[in-house]
Length: 505
Ligand SMILES: Nc1ncnc2c1ncn2[C@@H]1O[C@H](COP(=O)(O)OP(=O)(O)O)[C@@H](O)[C@H]1O
Ligand SMILES: O=P(O)(O)OC[C@H](O)CO
Image (cartoon, rainbow, N blue to C red; front, side):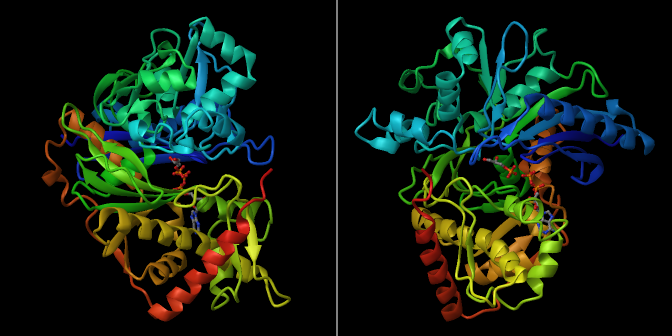
């Protein structure tokens, strides 16, 4: 009897449900996009109901396809959850209903909140970094929750009356899938908790000191659990009764899905944003070069693996910007046709800092900037400069990572939607000067959460058993430009980045 494991992947722009067999191959899947809300410049919101409803729809459709293949939903031994991280959701304990839209991780509205919090300490934005591993920026959930409390009376009142439930997207999904207001679980896994700023990165417990710093009561918080254990069972729908047995933030899930289990292993995932994680083992390394310290994964009672992370806010979303805002392409893959029509950008750089720049720059006052335009410039050059933007930012992060770790990477494992672009991956290898290694099966985020669930329900017992999973058919991209040419291009990028600073007011 083959064993199957399911994976919910609730990303920034789409939700998915996939069923994997015990060899890590996809047997059935369904994906759907949901609406993004941009109510003000720099703001990004999701309707919390869209997150759970699109997830449920994907489950129903994928299970139907699975059953059409002659299987039964009960052949699925467990499901894992992976999710867009940091996005903050608040709901009412009595009604189970959201109290306001979810503030999405890339939303930059909290710049003033950051300033206010930073002024409480003479360490400024580094105020609580030693405890939680993260600098104070607009990115993390704790700052978003503080903004909600300061700007929404309903949220503040619910907090003060003990009715407020706070969570990242994993918590919101698990709560609803396990019964919602009728005894739904209020939990979060340790990787998601490490993105809130509220957890002590060393003890893996909520920090009283930080809760006091932010002014939050502890009763609003979910219980922290490991990334791989049975949390509870799905109530209702096609997966009724099936254990939820794995949970990881999407970037940590990709680290697991790419089998980066050894110190020094790294991966870079190009989705809506782009995130490089470097496994540092059981040591929580605090970066000196603008990287974040995060929990990579923790399986059951085992020691956690930590990671250094370089986060880029805008990657695939810049392609959507060309499609939806500038309307110079009709679909994402078309960007490659345009970009391939020119041999270079003719000196154009596009710093895609739509809501500031994340690692390693951390400038919330930066805004999108296109430099070097001449009368010669065409939409083909802009398309190519858009692809290059993610690649230059990845280069800046790789340099920071090499400096922090002292062990320069020789090859970078990649995945995510934008890695479907061969051209983008070739440009990436050119700009990095090291090999870029792309697997054939690129749903590594979902695979990572399936692996976590599979361990908890006994499908796999050791990392060695995963060796053959997704190991065939990799494409290796190698640099085709000289070191001199590369350095010249990078200098131009750095010049353009400086020009993007100071536009937000
Ligand atoms: N062939 C392609 N060429 C370029 N970009 C692509 C291609 N296919 C998908 N993308 C980009 O990948 C992104 C989606 O990646 P995905 O990993 O699904 O993201 P997320 O998990 O954040 O929702 C989209 O922003 C889209 O622009
Ligand atoms: O939606 P993605 O795949 O770009 O991932 C979003 C990240 O989790 C944000 O930190």
